[in-house]
Amino acid sequence: MIVIQVRRVGGRPTGFSVSGHAGCGPRGSDIVCAAVSALTDTTVLALERLAGVEARVEAGNGRLSADLPDHLAPAAQERAELLVEAMLLGLEEIARAYPGRLKLRDPRDKRGGNHVPV
Image (cartoon, rainbow, N blue to C red; front, side):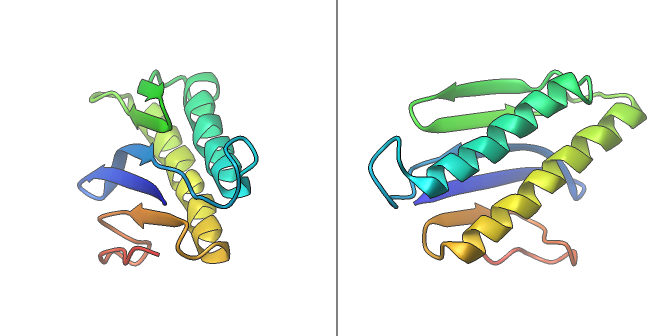
């Protein structure tokens, strides 16, 4: 199972971690792993190239962790948060389409409550 842990402060996303494998196919041919990797990797690239935000990133061995810098200008903060929230929307849809393959641990859902892992 892929586990995605979202980190928030005051309801705002500050980072995320991804680990594990979906087990939907052989390594290198797993559609769920590929979809999750595409979303998370693109978000890290977009933070840097589109939002101008240099996230602290650690990757390797089926793991990815990205954290936003502590102090960002308000405009950069807003762009970074939007990118992370867009990524989470995509991950939630993957979790719905492939039950039991992905667990999203987010301390807050879109309604302001606790997110029930899918």
